[in-house]
Length: 245
Length: 236
Ligand SMILES: Nc1ncnc2c1ncn2[C@@H]1O[C@H](COP(=O)(O)OP(=O)(O)OP(=O)(O)O)[C@@H](O)[C@H]1O
Ligand SMILES: [Mg+2]
Image 1 (spheres, chains in turn orange, yellow):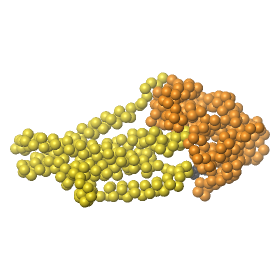
Image 2 (tube, each protein chain N blue to C red):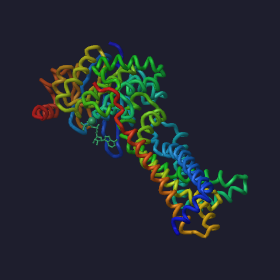
Image 3 (tube, chains in turn cyan, yellow):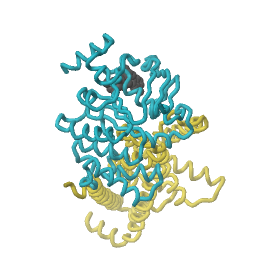
Image 4 (cartoon, each protein chain N blue to C red):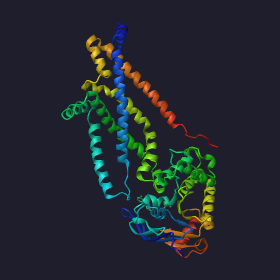
């Protein structure tokens, strides 16, 4: 088997006195879709953010694309290859939909305006937002915002996509449109790490589900193993609680 | 009596008053624009949060810069502009020859910059930090994020306060008469001195200031409305 795309070895992360990641080992193979689940405060976001250096792990090793990211000199270049989508979308409010997708390409990848526009339209088309290209991002729905955020990330031609609860801020009727796009990406072979509370989606789309608890990985396996035959007591408790949510 | 004295003053001294108005506006506009540029640089510098990607040298430079900026803001906001004008004008004359006008524009710009820096900084702080994170996650540098994402929004947020500084400058440039700038206050004072119609002259002066500030604030309101219109060109 080829070397994993993401290889995390015994990372620790503290915020002041609070130890949020207590020695996490974690791997993701190229083309894999991994869902991270776990209760609030268990460190899912922190783990995700350590991968693209939005947080800097205090200890341990993180290899992405075979590169030691904790010691990389060119953080910006590295980040461009790792797309990220946030719960709150975080679109640039001073730009239109298409500008959101163009500006980062022009600034980071130094492509021309025309080329940036072409790429932007291609991915807006993909997420079904091409007809809103010139819309004000403050005036579209949450589901549409998240689709634009996905297109914006894809414009950078990332090899790995990180999602931090991409549907948690959405009205229920808009969750589907976003999950469908993510599912499509997974089927096209994009490598994805997704923090989610959508158990149905995890069961349906994930190649592997990872349950995090109190700063550690408590259990992981295929959706079938984890949801239908969990081994650890904590996993069982968590799943029982989330069934009734 | 009062009315006819006023019309007399206006007809006789119209040109000097007009010079006063032009000088006042020149100083207020230049001072506000240069002050804003200074405020953007200083406020932007202050608002930058270095993350772990910053080098040791950058950290040192940032600390030192913050210290100097704090000192600058404290001094210029904590002393009257009139005092700043006389002190800086005469103190610098020991080193360079400069005209009162050059001194006036320098003083009002540097003074405005100290206020603008705080305005810009709070405008920046009002920009959702999630957008900064998103920009960084896309690979944009600290500076690219500041200039393409944060500052444009900060300026929009801060526009009312920036406009207010302009109005303040129209009025407060009057203290620069202390270094013999022929702005409106200086002109009115000389007219009153030669006509002895103090009430009428200063009444006219007050009216001119009122017109200047009212018209300015109407223009600023219109600009603000224009800026806040939805940028939507076509929503399907
Ligand atoms: N920047 C920070 N400073 C201080 N504490 C933080 C910071 N970020 C996260 N934490 C703390 O670290 C712990 C783990 O946070 P994290 O966001 O990783 O959890 P999570 O599993 O994503 O939870 P949720 O499901 O609520 O998003 C929490 O207790 C949180 O309060
Ligand atoms: Mg989280």
